Length: 82
Image 1 (cartoon, rainbow, N blue to C red):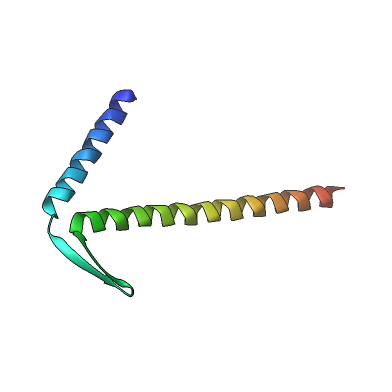
Image 2: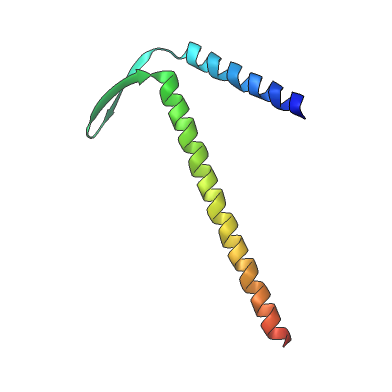
């Protein structure tokens, strides 16, 4: 298991290095309050991380909703059996 984790970490690091190396040109990001110049690879990593965080938050919200529904169903079943 430890070897598999090490291999996955190495593959992930190599993928990040290839992403940075292949997308090193500077871009200008314009937004309402100004602009910022940064490498394309940095922007891609930021967007990737934002997507991961938003996906995890959405999944967490769904799990909490399902748990709440499950608990309400159990309470209803207990009350109905009395």
